[in-house]
Length: 153
Image (cartoon, rainbow, N blue to C red; front, side, top):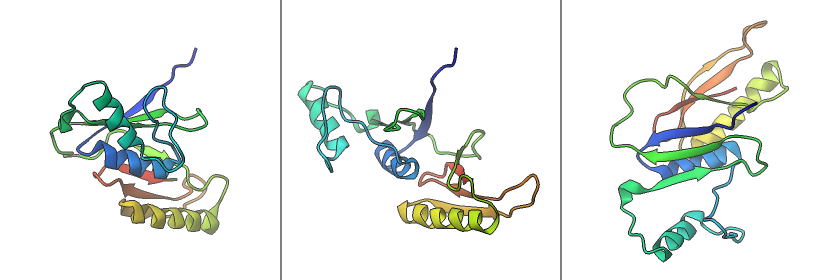
């Protein structure tokens, strides 16, 4: 039997990271239970109204966010507030498959194009590892807006 997993990010701004990673992964930000969001509607505004409708006064330190694969194949990603700063390199990181099936210069060009898109979303670039066949196909190391490392692979 396989088990589903959820990937959880500790962070300072769950809404910002949810919006960032939803764009990176082509995921969606789900609305509240039983609510269908109209095209272009802000899911976080819907959540605020839903929570207020329950009579809950949510403290800013209690804000959380999630993103989901609209096709239901990938894991749910959850973002929760923690008070401490990130101090060391991640022990686990995401490899974002941005150039499936491509090789050599074509692969690296596709990774560079995706890197540029993610820089515009608030990511930062750390370094590029060049292809070194037969074992290394090349990748780009980046950080999300809160400094969590990930690779474009």
